[in-house]
Amino acid sequence: MPEYLLPSGLDWSDVGSWDSLFDVVLPNDAYGNILINGEHIAENTEDTLVYGNGEKRLVVTIGVEDLVIVDSGDVILVAHRDRVQDVRRVVEELKKSNRKDYT
Image (cartoon, rainbow, N blue to C red; front, side, top):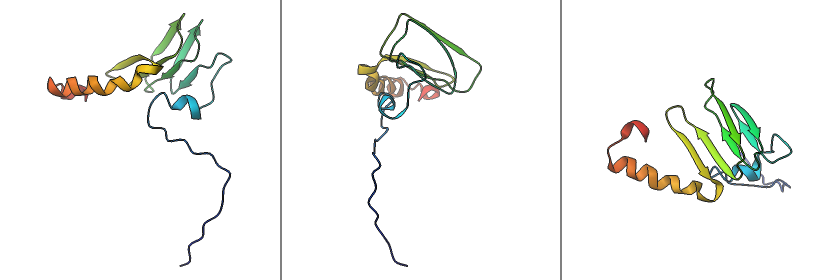
């Protein structure tokens, strides 16, 4: 079977971190906030990503900016966009402490 390669004008972005979602997902409001799979009330909040786990849980943010908030069901991550990669260190600490229920 022959193979073909066609040129494309598509952009590519590797979504390798929570912060990289700001590059590929359109904001839900005029303040640059992104909501994925949840409920969020944003009062004086800018450039913040909220990712819910689908459970009925409301996230309210007041007077914050540049945050990544992720609800995985049993853990809630709140981190500045510039530090979200540091979650790796927390995961390593959990593994060292034998906290398998959170890794």
